Image (cartoon, rainbow, N blue to C red; front, side):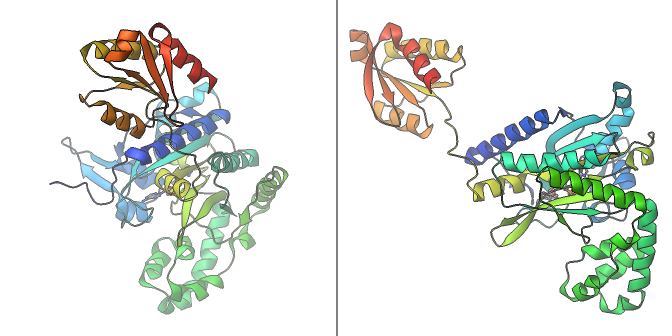
Length: 421
Ligand code: HAM
């Protein structure tokens, strides 16, 4: 027996219904915000992520599924969606169709991480990118869209964390201040922090090791290094959120795991059993397009992990009973009845009703059991007696009520019943 690779999942049965529910809601939200779907390849040139996500990040250093193809190209399974969208934006000259360009994607991403609750090697994201606006309104729009999605899914216990990372100049001065602060404390921090000190000093603020916390807490705050423009931008985003009743916690320690962010970044956290999920994360990435060879184009976006969303929805019982797998089951006993059942099945299917009939040669009791398992709303019962009388039985599955309906009227009867629901 060959099992699935570590860190991957089969999604089926009741769970797939939650996924479909999620995807429907996500597409609806994308639609009401005016975003169009984009589908980019599952693999890209590895260079794309090295140059955008950053070669010092964990994603690029440790987590990429990189491989050489037969033509000796260095490819990788995409670890995230933003860089691919940007590549596509530049390559397809989407700017010619006008800005802002608003796109969303749903699909698998790959990171070689240690699997645990809510963390997989193949996981799925729903993400959205708003390309071409530097306005605080664009930041607010993406935060608003994230919150709108959560509310649409009836997930109300989230906390939204937001931070202003400042422009490149602000970050340079902040990085210098951090370096200065940590310089004489390197003996007291973990080996990872010592490495980050050399490679990416901002990531020191992301350390979860207990021993590093007291030092981290006293580190200088980024806010002290913001230039007047960035302060103003932050103030405007804050104001728009307040005016639109979006509760946000300004968290000066929020740094994201990807290097391309500048300006506003945000994350949504959600309590899940004994832990807290990062459900969603995003922010502004004003320099990625030029880094990848396009013209300077300010952009902002976010992505959420669908596995985590679905797990949270299930935990919160955020959707009602899963929908019926078929609306109608046509039960038949005997050859003549089978022929009749196929006609009815065809008639109803052509009118958009989901119908199943017996494919297993089961007896009446087992056909009824199966119909129940499929959560059919109605079962039409056709046996020899019914054929003789020209009257079929229609059973309403939830109540168990049965009524007799003229054979020539049965399809219309079902249509009437279902449209009345
Ligand atoms: P990210 O924070 O790396 O951002 O990922 C976004 C979300 O994907 C996370 O909040 C989490 O829910 C989910 N996720 C990440 N890694 C895993 C994993 N190994 N297993 C399960 N779920 C995971 C990005 O990817 C950026 N591209 C977001 C963005 C879009 N920023 C701007 N535009």
